Length: 112
Length: 113
Image 1: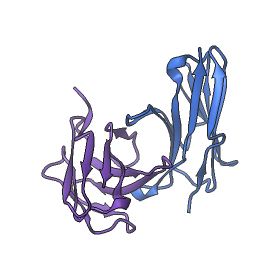
Image 2: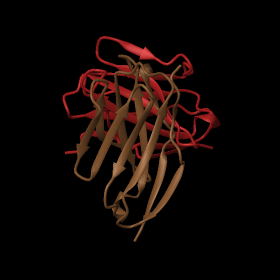
Image 3: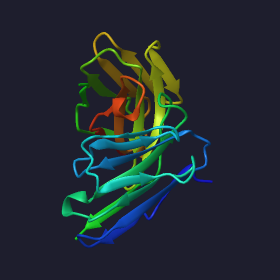
Image 4: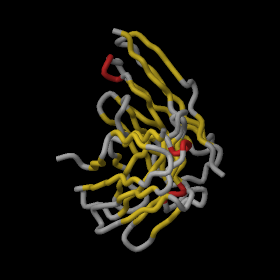
C-alpha cells in the first residue's frame, strides 16, 4: 500500500545508454514531480505535471523527458546518459501545487 | 530568488534532550513552509506544513513555528529519541507551480542513546 512507488531502486548503467525510471502514486493526487538530489543532498526540481500542464525546469537537459500515461503515473526517460547524471532521483506527488508533497523512496542512478 | 538556509548542517544530541532546528529564508512573501525528514537511502517524509497565515503547527513531539517577517522557521523536537536520527529539510513555497518550491540543504541530526 505504498503511496508513491518508484522502480528500480538502483540503476547502474554505461555512458550513452537510454534508461527509464517508473513512478506510480495511489493517493489520487493530480500533480506529480521529478526531483534530482545531488551528492551534496541538494534537491532540485526537474518537472511537474498535473495532466494539464507540464512545467519543465529550464536547466534540465532535453535528454530528460517525462511521460505520463495517466494521472497516477509519471515516468522519467533519460537518453544518452552522461557521468554527471549520476544522482538520486525522487518522484513525488501532491493534490494541487500548494499542498503536502509525498515522496517515493528514490532511485539511485550510477552512470559508469 | 528565494534562498533557504539550514544551520547547523549537522547536530548530535544525547537521547532525551529537547532540540531546535533552524530554517532561514530570504523572501518573506511565502505561501507555506514544509518540514521533512529523510532517512538514509529513503525518500522524504512530510512532517509539518505551515501556511503563511499560521504561526505554528504541532504533531506529537514536533512543533514547527513560522515568523515570516524575520524569514525564519524552527522545528522543535521534544524528548529526542534515537529514532529521530535523520536529515531534516525545510522547503519554502513562494507560489503555485513546482518551480516555486525551494529546499534547504538540511540538518543531519544524530540522537545518541
